[in-house]
Structures are given as structure tokens and as C-alpha cells.
Length: 480
Image (tube, rainbow, N blue to C red; front, side, top):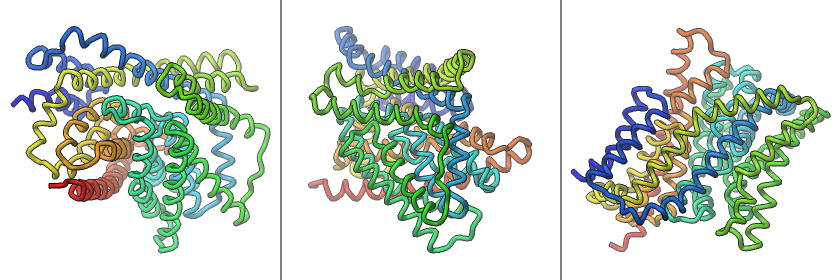
């Protein structure tokens, strides 16, 4: 009974989202119920509050600034025409066939998502896929499959939240999330081949496997050498470059232009800024002090947005409209994210997470089978890795203790499962169909059903692999 009471806020959030309340209202309901349950059964000592604020206020502010910077960066790129210039150039470079599809799924979309986050990668990719002649449903579905590197989306605020709640270091969680992402990268690659209009051939499936393996190795290598925050962007950039070079060998044109070079400047500032300052912070041993904020994606997204707003072709009116739109967009995302973070922190500090974990204790090692599915539900209903981790990383941390699975690896699988399931969130599918050009209500409903069913089938296969793999590791690690 006490476990069910502890789980009540999360159950309420899931139900609220299922009946299509806004994410902000669902988060507010969950937070209010958390406070009520704490008063009833899980009192938090007054002396613990200052420490809680000290631990969580900086990370909450950092995440909220990352969201603002990511939305502003995307709005400036869209309004200035930079995104359109990049899309046109990529379409000219990549040509036709399965190659461009894989370049977008394993290269362009995860690159854009890692630099901006919150579905912006799909927003950039879907119009390009539609321009390649894939049709509305296929363009929307394949564009969403490209959201396969969400643990590093917007430089990793969701992974940062999971790190904070679990006690696993950000770097370790990033590396192990990269290790656990191989089934994800393979799964979305194979699904993209199946969704593409061309006949499925062995050569296409082998190309998908090679592209997925390249992304896996590149992201893992970047995590190990450059740090977690820029790893998704660096890995995806390596893969996209590889696809472009292959297209060039097949006769594609990579000729650039002055507008293209201007459009690339903000991306270069963001990537080089995070990578270089991350290296300096590590070399100086400043990871645990205030110096780490020099390498924060929050700082560099805001700097990059300022750079994007000062490029030729942007004026004061454009900058004002972009930042105004970013502010409105932040109001749809930021408050809910902040409340989810507070909810997760309070559940962990008050003992509610531990009580939830005790409810799963009877499953023992079998709980490892549940971890990816529970995380996936969180990602699906919130549409956000940050929101899913804020809600569930604490309970998962406590529950993993009885499975025999190493905590860091279990949290990495949780992180990856929550991330990949965000791509099928109803709001994401709706956005994708609109970006692909869906307007007719009757056709839109049919397209939505078609896309959702194929995405959920793909996710079920990926979660099954993660679930069985984690269970096997738990059995082999458990001395009992």
C-alpha cells in the first residue's frame, strides 16, 4: 500500500497525459500530489531543504537555460533562412536512393537534435525527406526515426538529470548510454529501410547496419575522448560527413556558397565552443567546481544564438521576433520541465522513490526486464527525455539494487529507452505530419495511425532487445 501511495504522483501524470491534458498541467498535478503524499507519509525534515536547494537549483536553472537557448537557436535559423539553405544543399549533395535516407536518420537529424534538442532535428529533416519525394507518412516516420540520439539532445540535459538523481557521473552515464545505443541505431536504420519507398534489398539492410555501426562507434568514441555533452553532435557529424563523401564518390556535388558558409557559422561556434571548453575544464580539473559552467551547453547555446542573430541578413526586427517566439516556446516546455525536475528531486529526497522500489522488490532479478519498458512509457507520455528522467530515474535507481545489474549500466539502458520512445509521443507525431505537409483532417488521421503503428512496432523490438540484454547481464552478475 505504501508503495502504491508513493507511486501515485507518477500514475497521475501518466493518466493526465493519456487524457491529453497539457504537459504543464500534468506536471503541476504530479508535483501537487507529491507534496500531499509527502505530508501524509513521507515528511521531509526541514534541515534537509537547504541541501536539496543547493544540489538542485543550479542544475534546474542550467536545464531551463538549455531549453531557452535551443529554441532560440532553432527560431533564428528558421527565420533567417539558414535552415532552408542547409536543407537545399544537403538535398543537392545526397541525391536519391537509400543513401540519403540513412544520411538523414543517422547523420543530419541526430546532429541537429544534439545541437538544439526538443524535436528540432526532425523539424529540419522532415521537409528535406518530403522534398526527396517520400510522401507525407513516410517522410514523417523516417524523420522521427532520426531522433535516435536523444540522450545527447541539446547537449544532454536529460542525461544530466539522470546523473544527478542516480549519483552516476555524467561522463560514465554518457559512455554507457552510448554502449547501450547500438540496438537503437540498428533498429531505426532497419526501420528506415522498411519505410522507404524503394524495395527492400539485402544491400540496403547492410548499408543500414554499416551506417548504424558508424554512428555507434563515433558517438562512443566522442563520449570517451571529448565528453558527453558534445558526443552526439560530434558522432553524427562524423557519420554525415561519411555519407556526403560517399555521395561525392558517386558523383554528387558538394559545392558550397556564401549563404551556406554563413548558415554553418552558428553550428561551428556551438560545437567548437562546447568541445574546446569541455577539454579545458577537464584538463584543469574543474569538472566539480563552478568552472564546469564554462563548458555548459546553456552558455554556448545562448552565445550561439547571439552569433546567429548578428550574421548578415538578420536585423533587429528578426531578432526580436525570434526571441519572442523562443520565449513563447519556452513557456510551453520550460515550466513543465522544471516541475518534473522538482518532482523527481522531492521523490528521491523524501524516500518516495525508495518506497516505489520496494514495491518492485518481489520481482528481484526479473525487474531488469521491466526497466526499459517503464522508461519507455515515461518517454512516450512526456515526449521528453528530461521529463522522463526527472520522473523515473530516482525510482529506477532504487529498484535496480535488487536486480544484479550494475547501477550505471541499468540507468544507461533506462536513459536510452526513455529517449528513443520520445519519438513516438503523440505530440511529436502530430508535429511531424504537419511538417511533412499533412492538412486534410481525414487523411491526417489515417497518416497518424499509419506512422504511429510503425513507430511503436519498431520501438517494441528495440525495447525487447534492451530488456533481454539487461536481464541477461543481471543474471550473469548476480552471485546468487
